Amino acid sequence: MSGIEETRRQVKRGEKAQRWLAVLAAVLLAASLLAGFNHSPFFFLGTLAALPAAAAAAWVYYRLKGLKALLMLRERWGGRVKKERDFAIIASLFDHLQTSAEDTAVVDEQTWRDLNLDQVYALMDRTFTAEGQAVLYRILRSPCLTLAPLQDRAAVIKLFQEDTPFREKIQLALLHLEGRSEKDSTGLLWGDLPQPSPAAPLYHLLALAALLSLLSPLFLGPQGLALIMGMFGLNIYVHHRVSKTIAHRLPAVSSLAALLRTALKLSRLERRPELRERQDQLQQAASACRPILKKIRFLHPRLFVSDLDLIYDYFKYFFLLEVRGF
Image 1 (cartoon, rainbow, N blue to C red):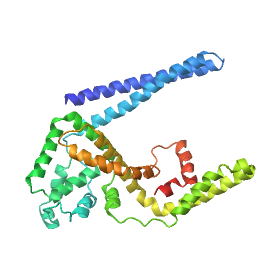
Image 2: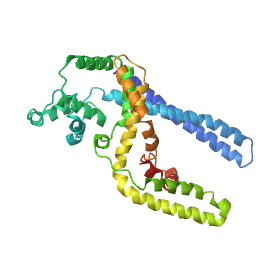
Image 3: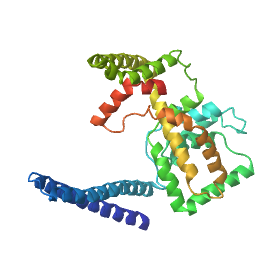
Image 4: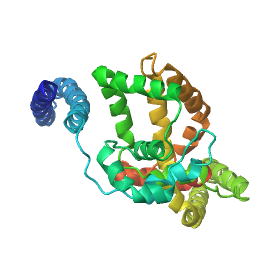
């Protein structure tokens, strides 16, 4: 509990420091603006003085965000997780992989129900990611009957029990996956993929035409602006037509992006003997998937609600970024 209390104190100190730094930056900026009306040199001095205070406030904000996440993890550690569980989704990974050669034994559906193992699973479940839920379910439905893998698993469990700082680093990395549906990523990875669109080359040509149209005012004068607006309208129409067929798949793609980025983070953590082989596998797999991440960056949902979103949307429509990325 001492670790939790110390983290709480750090959060309170961080909140206090953030408030004071924000107030200081605001006061300095306001004073410089007032001085600016008289063309005073204090306008520039006040503005320069406000920048470090604003930068420090921003640093404290991100530091505070990490501390709050750490406090939440420490408060939840070992406690029962009360939440609604959709076992049809939780079982999706097991359903896709139950014929794997790794599964030497399987608890059949009837036995699972007779023993009320959904309730047992709910009592055992301390995960906070959909992927963690799915893997725990598969472990219970496909119990390991050989000694070596069980010893390996026990060594990893012991590592997490004894090395709290390292375990918390992994938890903080996994926290980015919280709240996502396993159904999304499992269905994308093991389900049927849509056929590539035969119109894909046309989308690339339209994006190139949009780019070239930006140069048209240099040669066509005011008529070039009409050409830009025409390309903009055409590409908006194409975007909305195609979006109707792909919108239902975008959450799965977003989940895949979060999964790949988390894999990269985990592979870059300091190596432990108990996890070295797993981290090497993660690094190889995540590196092989980098081309996917380059495409996925245009398929993310909005992170903020602001005027910048509107500007980005226009940019995305004009160059068909989402359509081409998908």
